[in-house]
Length: 432
Image (cartoon, rainbow, N blue to C red):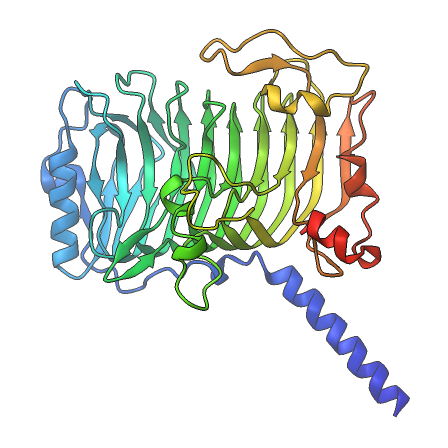
């Protein structure tokens, strides 16, 4: 009997290890579609002039509509230069973009918010979408000639089963992140991006307040091999006022959230000369789970920022909102290299060790952004680190800080010494 129990314990442990090892398997997030048979070339079949002299948006939209109407397929965008804006993807249409392609946004005379590619925004929900390069190498999105900075490249809303990959973005501190994710009402339901992969992308010269990815609402998404210079590479931040105002007393009976984030997996996320590689911030939304591994920063404020929930004064103060949370956050394998010209805000000055003076230099594009020393590899200052007697924010070794002379690898010290099992009822009120 004891041998049987031992065997069962071994099998259970082996199963848990297997599950952990498979959590970032791409097949758990996106299923390639095999029935894409109506395949076309944007230049050869639709006569697009692949130079910057023309706006190719109308021709690209017509090609997408044609492929969609014929059951779906692959649209090849061959080598050349293109100008696109406000493109609406449709179900079962896949854009295969040559790594020898450079895309610029259309020149605009207004300052309205806009996007280059839309996945389910202001349309019915869509599914089975990909924008990538079959070569495995990156195409380029060039924003250095853009005359309206209020631009996102990939706007993901009511979309299921999607892949965004193989892209290099030359930014100029534009207002929005390269990839944005949020929800929208459809038929009385709040529909959000589900079952997707965002991988193999890099952005240069990102704005501090944005970066590569900004997620407001999404479920079962893998973020993999993402890098950025400037800003926060992966922002798991549910701060949009409209989203927060759907919480509290406005929640349907039995629901803990509308929209928000759940089943988020991040692998190999890096930041250079920015604020952080990974940011986790719930505001007033009660989110699900995050599993992150392989987080790296060079000359950035932090590698990882895990921040507490709060109710902003911008939100509806009459609907009994409370401080947001994540059900579970695990971060593992973090490496940060110290630098003297990281991007920080004054709210983080309190985390500097006494040996380092608060920075005074400002960034070239915003007087709210300071340029100064890196602060720490990991900031874990969440007010939801414990749920009951269980620790729900976990930072696992290895955590390596290179060149930090006065700072611990994980701050604040209260998190490092946290013992949820020993907390009293009063302590739970402080930590949950």
